[in-house]
Image 1 (cartoon, rainbow, N blue to C red):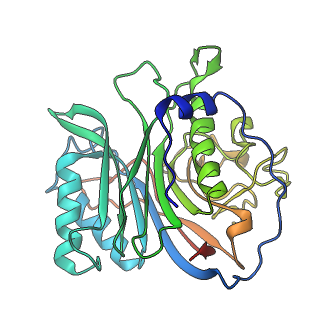
Image 2 (cartoon, rainbow, N blue to C red):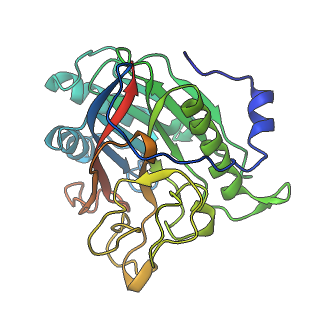
Length: 314
């Protein structure tokens, strides 16, 4: 069944902290489920900040080649201008990457004119055809952007949803709550409601918070309690939280030179989450060095990739 709520119901729900859920161990698929493996890819491309909406400076080629080379089933892009979105569409379509050339991507604007008069926002892409998108505006942060959560199911597997979001970096207190915490709670409420409706959700994007921050404790699984990431009370695993050098935290996803993460490493703020009780077996994540094939660095973020097998209701 498809999950939809009126904005009034949604706004009321997100004001409360998501309640803890008793977590069961991941188990093999039942007769009403299928186990399916997916490669996930996400990148904040700084499409306006660093590229001013350009499509011919190497960015489109770099990211489309990476999606193909990593055999991504799902890809999410943050900070993308509309012309760049259309250029990625055209590049992937021309290469035969999507199975359905007219039904494999969705765009959601954060601002209608930010890119020199064009929309600015985020996008999702899928190798397989997607169903209709759900779009959830997040609480305003006082800026010119209206940040969003964008989700769409697979057409052939409507109980599997791929989502992306870009949480505000603002710590401002608005309505008695830090706005970044409010937005994180809003997103978590939506994905938990999807779960309650029988859906499996893979969500990737820029969360603008490090894994050990307190505002991420409602997300990370309570079963994850390690020196770099403790005090958690949630139900989700981040696909890079098994990283050998930084267990529970993962690898930096920002440009080289940053030392604001644990032990002087670069911070991790881009993430791929899946609910722990939907994961089957091992999962992996990794961040990739930033390409310099765009007349310089292609972004101030690294590409983050992950592979996971999940149980999906049929």
